[in-house]
Length: 420
Image 1 (cartoon, rainbow, N blue to C red):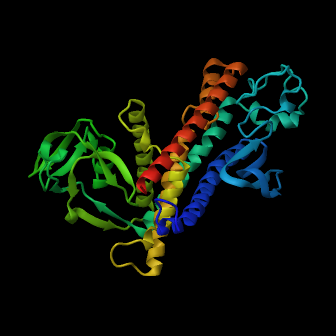
Image 2 (cartoon, rainbow, N blue to C red; image 1 turned 180 degrees about the horizontal axis):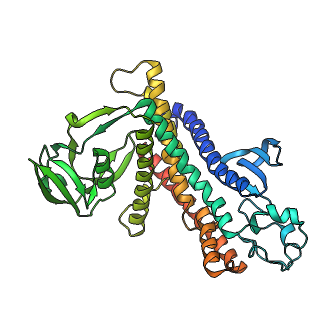
């Protein structure tokens, strides 16, 4: 007996998806928090706690510098708690504020060096290692180091994959034009070499795919080399439902061009070319995410495309078994394992970039919200008032909780509709 709408094979993949998701998230969270941790150590801030997961610790130990490392019960995140923090959100502790009249918790401490009674009980040694008493530039570096670590992790993953496995690179050459498509209406023809889109140079077919998928309903100006002559064509990608690499449904912009198989070649990368390509891939994901969110804000993208933890777990599970699922002749076990591992690690890089990017959004409680407050402090010369910070903090929690509820509902709805 199986759950209604779900196949036996899907139920077998469920524990793999959950396990893969936990591993994926734990690795990414560790690097994110280690970015904060390493920057804090470098800038002389004492780190009290480094935790992977939330809730009651199931394992803990203390290093030589006094930091307590924890593995906690719920592996759905993590945090670094600096000296002077009253919470993982970096609000000043009661000890730091004990001589001040009661005031709301904030994401910042008052201006470094202020002697208004809030630090009178702290020793000079403690003041030197308190996060909230560091200059604004130091606090900004520590906060930004988390998302930056996510980007560095992704670049390192792409770099290793490119050097280890290489990649197929296809020139943006038209092999076939789909009938009744936007490309046919625009006048594309087999043999056309696409040079640029909206003055953005196109190096390979993947670049073209990225541009068109995020441009449904937008008029794009193509420069195309045809018989040695560059011509301009205007085309508007049409929103269509497609299957992604793992067979999931997605609505994206489709131009209606099939690449020329003869224009593809396998490339093995050396260390420096791989690093350059890895950096380009990180930027491609960042810019693509930014464009998607920009289009979402103005109503050009469907909010149902947003995904959350369930969708991430689904993709993690699918990538972990992708090498063992083939419609044709199945590769040898070791080859299937290599394919699954490569796809899973590649997904980890993409998710790491996405988490780093989302953490930089200017929402209080996220790293970007802290940076927004620090920018205000740097410009005005003093921190934003405690009451205003508290209001922003509360709004940030409401916004983040609402977003998580919405994307989780999206995930459940999409998952059920996929199996209906």
